[in-house]
Image 1 (cartoon, helix red, strand yellow):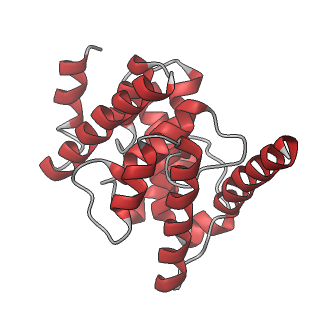
Image 2: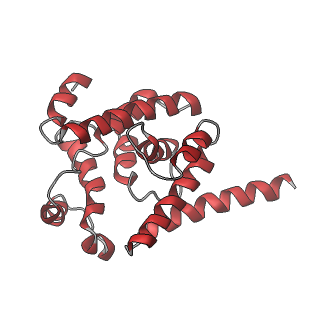
Image 3: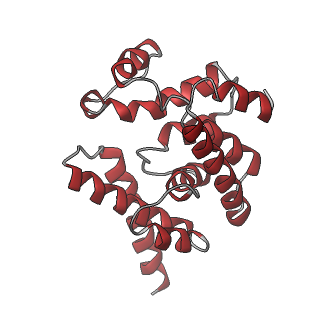
Length: 195
């Protein structure tokens, strides 16, 4: 499918506002891929499709995940909205014909992150946070840091997400903690190697 075909098909799955968000994530991801040496085509496609299942009704997420054979954790059973990311990856593969494992993984991880994230994983996670239609306290700092340091911006975005979840009394997915710890370990290892 080409870009226009994908947009047409996505418009049947997403509200106009969510579609504009996805377009914003796609454009932001392309800019970040250019800045940090990533694949712009993969970044654009992953950004566009990252929320393909975001408007699936909450009650349908768990049955749909199970139908796709997605392994569902207790956290995801308790907070099914987290399943929109892996289901979006499945839709990208089945409905949109995406076969690239790196793109599918970036879509799969865009909500929780994980340890050992690839460049594309980081770009899509962060593009989802900083795309132009987003607006929350602390966002400008993340955007500014994302101009020069992908990992620092990602760490700040993960911290922001964790703070928000704590304020809301939500469950923090263990892979989000793993993503944050992995970034901190790499930063500290780098500091030790240079001292």
